[in-house]
Image 1 (tube, rainbow, N blue to C red):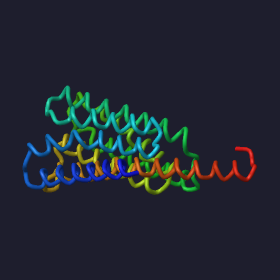
Image 2: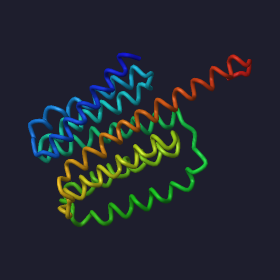
Image 3: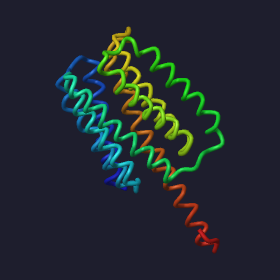
Image 4: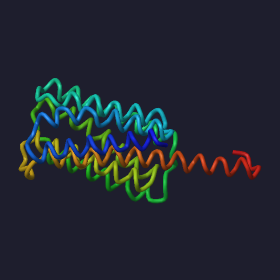
Length: 223
C-alpha cells in the first residue's frame, strides 16, 4: 500500500508538472513530464491488483504519448495506432470483467449519434490521408467510452467520456477548427483525468467482484 501511494503521488506530481509546463508555455517541461505519466499510472494500477489488460492499455497510451511529441505525420499515425491498440485492450477488458448495466441500452444510441455527427462534421476539413484513419480510430474510441460506462460504471464511464473529449479536441485541431486558448493544456488535462479514472474504475470493479466472490465462497454458495 505504501508503494502504491508513492507511485500515485509521483503520478500526481508528473501530471501537475506537465500541466504547469503547458500553462506557462514551457515546452521542455512537457517533454520531460509527459512520458512519465502512463508508466507511473500503470505501475500504480499493477500494485493495486489491476487486470493485465488494463496495464497493457495504459502502456499503449504511453507509446502514443511519446510518438505524439513529434509533429511529423508518420508519428501522428503511429501514435493513433498505439492509442487504438490501447482501446482494443480496454474493450477486451470490459468484455471479460463487466456485465451490461441497466443504462447500457440508453447510452448506445447517444454514443452512436455522437460518433456519426463528429466524423461527418470533421470529414471535409481533415487532410485526405487522415480521414479514414480518424474515422476508424473514432469508432474504437467511442466504443471504448461506451463500454467503460456500460460495463464498469460511473467512474470508468466519466473516464471514457473525457478520453473522447480529449481526442475530439485533437481532431478539431487537425481539422483547423477554432481552438480554445492553450488547447494542449485542455487536451492533456482531460486525457490525464481520463486515464486515471479508467484505471481507478477498473480497479474498483475488480475489487468489488473479488469481494462478492469471497462472500459467495464463505457462505457456501458455488461461484
